[in-house]
Length: 109
Image (cartoon, rainbow, N blue to C red):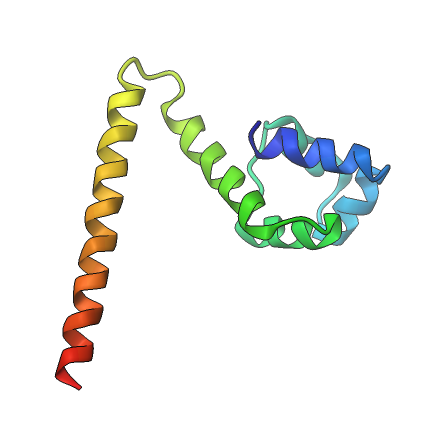
């Protein structure tokens, strides 16, 4: 389940009208409907607002939002899994480098 599916599920569970959520996000109802159908992407700050409104885990909703962004880019690619593996490895290397920099900075103090 990706972001759009999850926010629809949360909205229906709480019996909240789409217009209420659209107003909270300061967008029109049609735009919110497109976000919920996956036809338009929500902005990161909107995800945080929705998490607050739904009283749900912000990190989980942000993870689903980000996964949906990545999915929309690679879904039609034949080598999507390989590309995602490369990205995964790159993220690990990047985070490892950040940890190394942190320790080097701490050692100098």
